[in-house]
Length: 456
Image 1 (tube, rainbow, N blue to C red):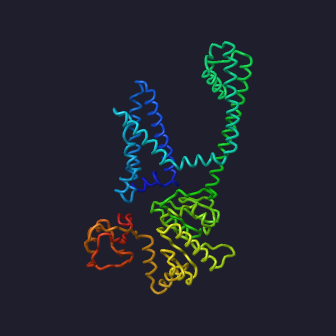
Image 2: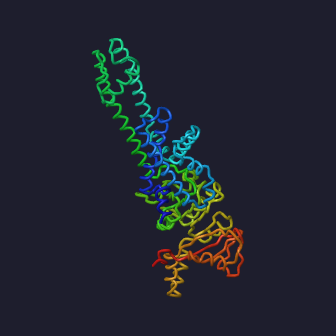
Image 3: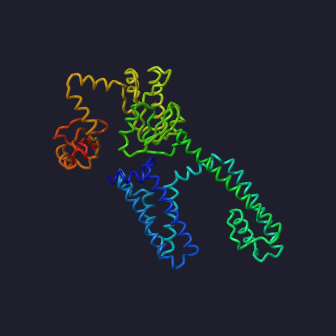
């Protein structure tokens, strides 16, 4: 329960809770950085200093909360604790108000680097939005720069030359132009010449036009970005340790539902339109093309599943050829990925086995046919298979010391696990006897009833 909550808050970027919390966390951290820089350069008034100090402790608590959550989610605890990013988080936890000036600068640097790394995808999204409207944005910026600079220079020349007591230097003219363009108009500095008054009217109208156009351009870029996300046109090159599914059919839907508990990002590649992708990322394109695969980050993926996606005009041989070609391309760019291929014809499966392209091969419909045949022979087979699918959890465990299977099972008994296999040197021994000697480094294959079933 706690692990699932931390995953939704800190890692599951498809969750609404994740979006809300990350927005909150980003805002709090940026406020902390702004406050610390201001305190270092200018210093807060003594009346507000206790409030800023309390806010600093609150920020430290937020960072500590995230550090704890990521520690709980980490598969390798020690590796996480010793990682540079984890050390950076621990430094950022330290409140800013310290007697040593050097330590204060270290804390500021740690928080700046933390923001730069933790929220890099947010920054990349913003940069992508501006890139899509770069021509319009640069044109507006040039127009704004020309209008703004010329207005400041002319205002200063007119008002200073006429002896306006409120405009003593260039900064006063800059202040007047900004306040007028934003239509705030405090009235503390006003033009006294008729030319200055006419220019102020033009500044007010021009400011409204330029700011409105800027908002429209940025809004168009944001809308375009959202549409590209929905249409699967976004690049996922920076994603890593994720699961890529190539092809969309009923099998893909079941796979995605089954893979959710792994708490890994899931990315689907297909030429089909997916109206509302939920709980997974979507990349539209032909997964038979290497550029599409690289855009999906298969070179850094944990697992890739290539399904036998049936397309109009494709024979079974053509579908299998596309699957095999895709598998070969994936294996070329990522030697360590867990690769699963689904083929339609048995002879093609033999070809894949001979070339050792995939780690696992599934022959479409064959496994289902075998199960149905079992149902026909014995009625209880159906209930048995249903029970395994619906009520049995699978897990693996790296053994840390030599022992027998019986001794290992006694240690796992309180968690409800039973040993059904041992992986050693790439080979699997299924259903080992109690006397079978286990070695340090063996991987145990475990099963158990669902926890909710046990509670009932």
